[in-house]
Length: 167
Length: 167
DNA sequence: ATCATAAAGGATAAAATTATCCTTTATTAT
DNA sequence: ATAATAAAGGATAATTTTATCCTTTATGAT
Ligand code: FES
Ligand code: FES
Image (cartoon, rainbow over all chains, first blue to last red):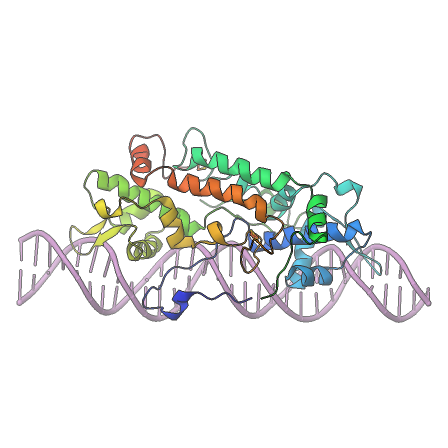
């Protein structure tokens, strides 16, 4: 999945400072997809290994394993070692949401930090975007909490949504 | 402005995959602040140099200069070389908004790309966040277009908002 | 015309993020 | 008990983003 840009062909014409900024870090995108996949498999009572997860979400498996370590420590998902081991979720993970996944991986900058990078978001000394950003944050938090991870897993299960795509 | 984390003190306790993800890249944060500052100075008919801009927005000035090159090429701001030269805005930049700044620096991923990193955002083959993300995007675009750059500059001018903070 | 100034541009360097590999530890099946 | 399996963890590498420095080009002041 190598992404190419039109301006890659004309370095001297544009020589633009290119970037691929998303709302979530790449690591966090993997984490979100991994957790949804684990939920999906847990619906059928299956535990899954890091390798399988990596393949299903189109992420490098060693890196996926690292991310899963964090998620286990933060109790977003559970794990067992050894044969028949793997990652899973049970009753104890029921209350977790995508917001918890994002917090575990990307931290709270998206929710709490100053969007323009001032040392902290402050009502007394606000940056130019401060007051507008609140609506955005409300929507983001809503997006990350409105549906349960189980629901999201079911949507993937019935083909309504997908965790990976080919070309 | 060195940011320290509580878990830096307990590497073995947490050894978390830490990250500082914002909505905008650091480069884009600089760009936004730089453009607002240029507008502010242009209100008083002043052109400003990259060095001064860097200092006012608390960004490295050589790096700020690079960012400004891109913004000039994208016609978000204007520039003149030589003595009495510098960066400025005039009538021809009146219609530009923060959205143009973000597009110039971070590209359109935030507005168009798949939030979970699938090769492209697609209605037919949507990722689990696809339908929810739309509301968020509407809000983000609103935030970046509701106020003119001139307005934002005036708010900084009268002290309502700030581009940098000390501690 | 010459000089000083400031942006433009090229080449590198530093830091952070993403990715891989290999060893250790826990668990299960035999 | 032993061997096989899979997560946990450590070390390191590749890539991308951020940052610096130095040279060239354009412009205005003298
Ligand atoms: S978002 Fe910048 S100060 Fe609150
Ligand atoms: S945001 Fe992922 S497919 Fe549209």
